[in-house]
Image (tube, rainbow, N blue to C red; front, side, top):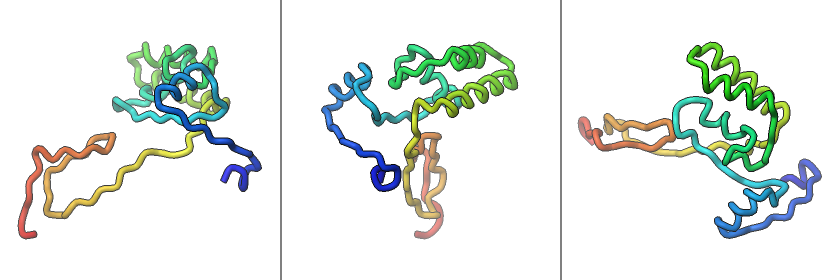
Length: 137
């Protein structure tokens, strides 16, 4: 699709996971695939991935203003100030685009209407520990 739609010739390389992580960590790539699932309910779970020198900043991208805004957001107890700092940082990230989001995780599930009390968390895991069956099936 990249060649057809963008005129970009791509050569795929497949490596064992540990070798791949080492290659990514050393910057031995032009395009690499990584994923991230927010591990807490806040935009910062994604925003601080790209600070200079961050352990998950695989593109090795660096922007001083971005770093300052993330630090400001992390150290503020004022939600309006924090949000504004993250929005400004996000604009820098989008304008400079060191990453290219190509897909979002999804999970398809089916559940009969008589199953009650099942709880899905933000990463779409389902907890049936307190669920029950109600009425006729």
